[in-house]
Amino acid sequence: MKIYISLPITGYDLQERKQYADSVKKRLQQVYTDSEIVTPFEINPDQELSYAEYMGNGIAALLASDAVYFCKGWDKSSGCRLEHSAAFEYQISKFYEP
Image (cartoon, rainbow, N blue to C red; front, side, top):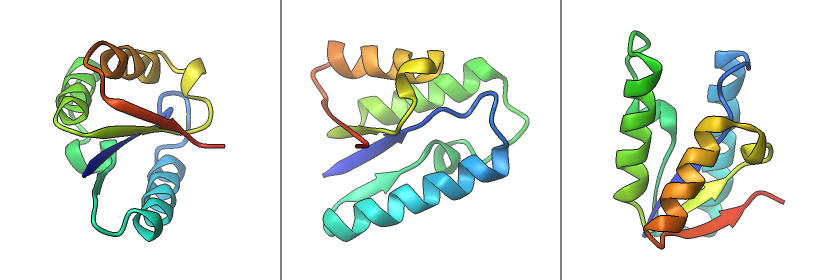
């Protein structure tokens, strides 16, 4: 199973968000030991992309996944809401950080 992590990034300290994404990934790897788990930072290592390019890469990774894990605050992030809509439209399993 492939799991994409969706988390709010815009408006946050980028380094803090990377660390948070890594910690979420580690927690998920402990539960889903046979799964590939990807973060937005792994699919967008280039810091010089436009917002549209970041989101396009994120949506492409999400559509190639079996499930999406939405971190706290996803509903306040336009990017995460877009990812949520894509997951809903393409019937990709969704689960949420408590």
